[in-house]
Image 1: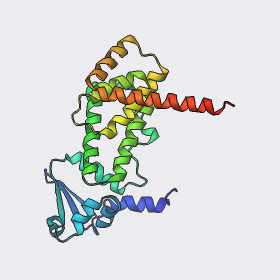
Image 2 (image 1 turned 60 degrees about the vertical axis):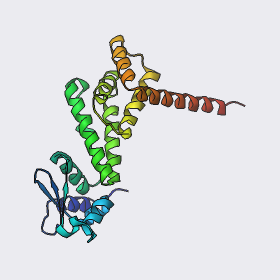
Image 3 (image 1 turned 135 degrees about the horizontal axis):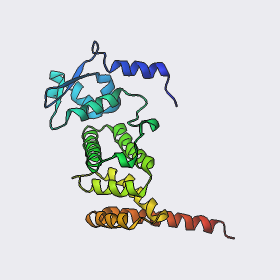
Length: 225
């Protein structure tokens, strides 16, 4: 169901309306974000409880310090709280091709996604978790080439502590290309290196292909007789 435009606009205005904010999120650098407990209730039961339960020091001080979290990731989470409907990417936002992504840029993109996923998981921001996975799916859908998939896989294996949720979209696209396309020899060599260093991705892709083939076989059987 589409939300009324006025509600969306007012909710976004609330992001910068500090006249009725009643809680503060702060980073290690001292940067602060004024927020509203009602908004925290909508998104994070962890942050809401910390802001409203008297046994928490954060409630007594009306402030929580998120240690070890970069400012840009807290900014992204707070913006997400006030951005309705919840989306991290719009279809028209991606105007660059795979050639415009450097290897370092890909690694930074996946590192940032990892950090945001860990932040969302830590404070149980379920909608942000879902949106991050959808953002990764959109990233691969937009690229849609063997080259991007191989380069993305090469970048992701260089990122430490990648959550399982991030491997899913990549595994799906590897399976898609394995089943439909024959990679160039140079791409195949890179892909073999990636799969050798990250066997769980290879196993996941094979499972996806097996599930797809099994589904196709059952569908063909259903037309028999």
